[in-house]
Amino acid sequence: MSCIFKNVYIHESSYIDSDVNIGTGTKIWHFSHILQNSNIGKDCSLGQNVCIGPNVNIGNSVKIQNNVSIYEGVFIEDGVFCGPSCVFTNVNNPRSEIVRKHEYRKTLVKRGASIGANATIICGNNLGEYCFIGAGALVTKDVPPFALMAGVPAKRIGWISKAGGRLGDDLICPIEGTKYKLIEQDSLVEINNE
Image 1: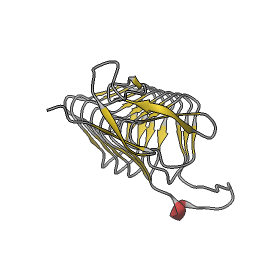
Image 2: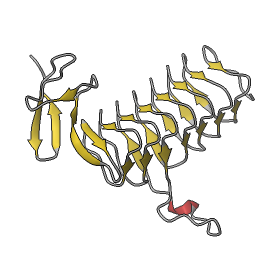
Image 3: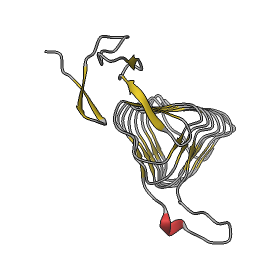
Image 4: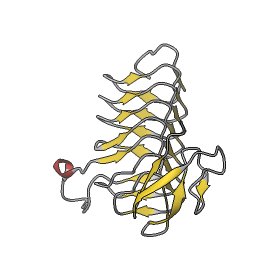
């Protein structure tokens, strides 16, 4: 470990490069590496063998489970959950003998999204707010907010609430009673209860 941060836990087996910012309350567990010019928000948890960066921004209250690498071109907003061994690509047609760092495609994971274990997110696709990507799914296109995705390639199999409850035909969260409304064939919004 090459830096000292206040109110941050970094396991002694992990390594933090220079020019890294880590928010208070964040925990970084065994054998992880945070590369230069990366920013990690407050109250995050990075599991074992996590690699971040270089030049990556992670929001607040993000949970990244074991064996996940988040490289340049991936942007993680607040409250995102990355399940164990999920994968983010950054080039569409990689070849070992051809350097394609100038071809990185941006991937945005929006607030509250959850990505299941061993899911793969192909670069250039955005994950909408509070969507849920099932374990082992292969995301090959943009995902709408609140979409429940599964399969290879991933398809929308339903809708899910902010609280993580699968929505039925009434579009009411079974966990907390929040109501949702379908505004287009493939777009859902939360209805403000006033």
